View 1: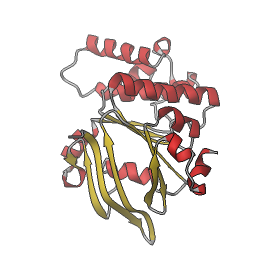
View 2 (view 1 turned 90 degrees about the vertical axis):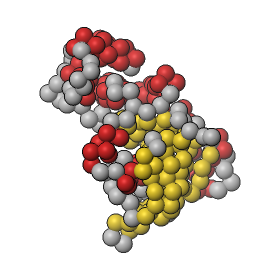
View 3 (view 1 turned 180 degrees about the horizontal axis):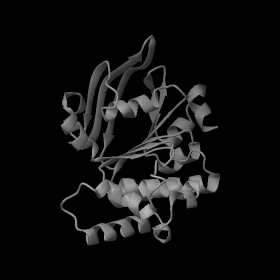
Length: 242
């Protein structure tokens, strides 16, 4: 039996007269990287917000890590979200905190971990993203790529079972973008996390994706590996990879 961490069936979401998601069906296996492509406004961000209960769909079912998201109360939903990591476009660091304090912040409510263990965990996680030397710097002292790495480290420190990446390479130069994409791959291998990666960056998709879906007109219009989709006979599909 397949071990799915995400199961979405017949998902529909409309805003006013705009039907953003018409009929989305999607399954993600444990340890799989799924890249979601689509033009602006195709519903990529709405999809992941429905997944974690930030937006309630009009129809369909959403099962995340074995839990039916639509049946959960706020308390149960918050517990489930602790198993999900988010990496936002900006990195979303707290500007008034050092890198160390940013990584300690998600652990502030944990009663089962000592200060010494927190120190070791922070250092180990920063080492994994290659930034242990920046531990006492402020976010304003870091480059865009470094802020993304710290954001990823803060996500990893809670050891999530699934990570949602929202445009992880936006605003970065090609070399740094490639480094972040390769880091996403390393995280997958080391932590066996499943990931949904929303991106417009074709090189990021090529490096990170086990599988790709392309959203169009509210449905998963095409699905396959990078090679399969880039060689598609459908000109609209293949145009993403030009």
